[in-house]
Amino acid sequence: MPEEIEKEILEVVEREKLDKATAVRTLLEMGIAEWRKQTALESLRDGKVTFAKAAEMAKLSLWEFADLVKQHNVEWVRYTREEIEEEIKQAAVAEPT
Image 1 (cartoon, helix red, strand yellow):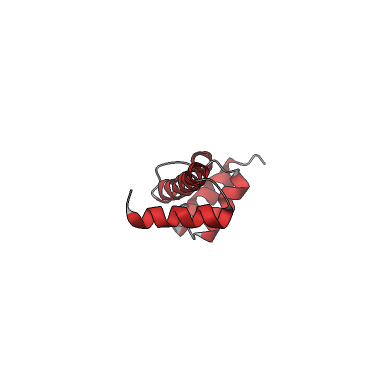
Image 2 (cartoon, one colour):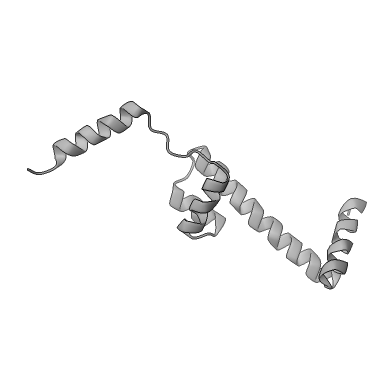
């Protein structure tokens, strides 16, 4: 293990009053959780997954994930103004009178 990482772990052990194994496990869980969030955000931004699937990947509720998306300013809706206007026109035509 690199010396710098060993120092970081020992700092956590001292600060949190944990044994080394618990500290490593806790840090690993935190790292995995952060990795899941970042991967979900990237997948959503790149259009690889739906919003719901990205929230699932991040292991967050839809509301929690919406907050995360907002915090990171992730653009994931990719409609042009013209596409939105066309959708509105089609919806208006489809409405029963």
